[in-house]
Length: 113
Image (cartoon, rainbow, N blue to C red):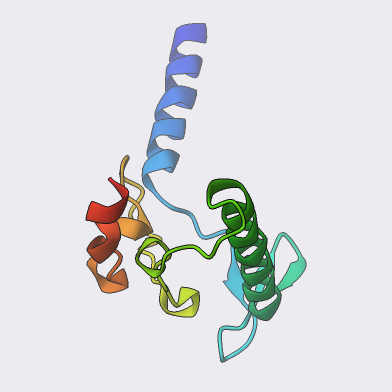
């Protein structure tokens, strides 16, 4: 009996890992606010957070890797983060939004591989 119970639990976990259950719910008609477990998330704040982290990262790379000199333009791609898309229903191992052709990030693959 214990074996059947554990097998059923394992099969349920496997099944749930293959289905991406939506944990977020859009709260406005413009898709700028999400709710997650009762907490409201404003996408503007996430964009600001990403911009801040990117700015600090770029500054640190400039200081450490380039000894305070400007980072060469061809090493610092400009990607409009607001236009990135993701397939939230694809939970296959190895999938990444970076590989999604709609993001046009593959043009930088050679420079970073």
